[in-house]
Every structure is written in structure tokens, then in C-alpha cells.
Image (cartoon, rainbow, N blue to C red; front, side):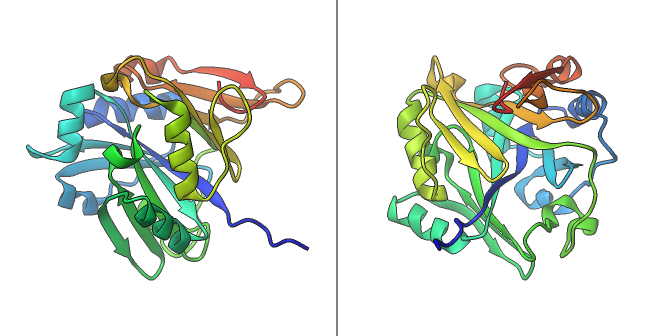
Length: 258
């Protein structure tokens, strides 16, 4: 019997905003989220943040608190929007080796007893900062706060179902992400990666400025979808997050990606 493939999960999607509180309030209202965790550790990057638990996945918003930060430079180029995606991988060592073989630069790395993280350079991965992480035990999540450190907690009802990334060369970027993550690109018309319980889609961007994480799909309970469909809330993050998040529409789609 063939060995089961190592799990690759989308555990956290990160947004960046010039003003933290309005986006925090809008997301909380749109998705009926619980009180977020505020991580003092992001101060080392010149940021403040909030981290919302959704099921056993997470939505984070970061905002610069000082000049000349990576997040601030991103805001200057793109404005508020999608910023980073964090994957929880059982085979982190393999992913790190594959990234190194492709000459993907590492901009930050840490290895703690209960979690490891590796931020990859967005210019090498394209579309977003990609972080390769590994939870120990699998399913815990230090970045979510004390109740998730070395153990599993309980978030608001739902989970992250997927993301959409806009890039100038979707097939090439999908192939790069797939190789690093140890996955295969799907056979559909739109390049996509099948994750453990989720999906990453790659769509065409109309300019380099428009590249980035443009949509987050959050699976929501509380309604009856059609046969074979999953209920999701689509959070487009192409534009100003405050009205977009507040007006997030609940829709059904077979692939969990609106």
C-alpha cells in the first residue's frame, strides 16, 4: 500500500492595512468572529496585528507602526489588501530543501519546539509572501495565541477554504508554488493546487501592480448549500478592505472557491 502524502494545509491568510482597527472591526462583523489575539512578537517587524481563529485556521491583519517596514513598502505600492499566506506542512524539511534548490530566498526563519516558520521572498515566489510552517503537535498553532500554543483551541465557526492569487504568469507561478509545496497543479482551465481541505487558485493579473492575494474563501456554517457544494464567504481583497469586508456576500460553490 502506498504511503499517504504528507499534509499541506492553508492555516493562515494575512491582510495588510494602513489602519488596523477599521479592518479588524469590519472582518469581525462580516464573519462573526471572536476576540482576536494580539501578538506582541510582530513588533520586531515594526507591526501591530490581530489574529482571528476561524475553526482551526486563522485570519490576520497587520499594520505598520514604524517607517521603512516591508509591510509599509507593500502598502505604498498596492494599498490595503492581501499580503501573506501561511501553510502548515508535515514535510517542512522537504519543502525547505525544494525552495533552496530553486534558489528561493528566505527572508526569515525560526525553529521552536512547537512550531517552525520560513518566510520566502515574494519576488521569488510571486503573488504573496509564502510561509512554510510546521506545527508540533500537528494542528496546534503558536501564532494563534496562548490557547493554541502546544495544543489546539477553538475558533469561530468555519474555516479557511482557499485563496485566489493574481499574477502575470499563472501557470508558471502555480508550478513554482506546487514544486515548493510538494503538490501537483490541477488539470483545469485555471491553475490550482489541491490542499488538505482547501485550494489555491491562480488567476491572470492585468499588471505587476495588480499581482497579489486577491480573494479569501471562508467556509461558513448555518445554511443549506446545494448538492456537493460548500458554503463560503468570499472576501475580495483587491480594493479598500473596510467596505469590502463589511459587505462580504455568502455564496455557494462546488469547489469552495467563489
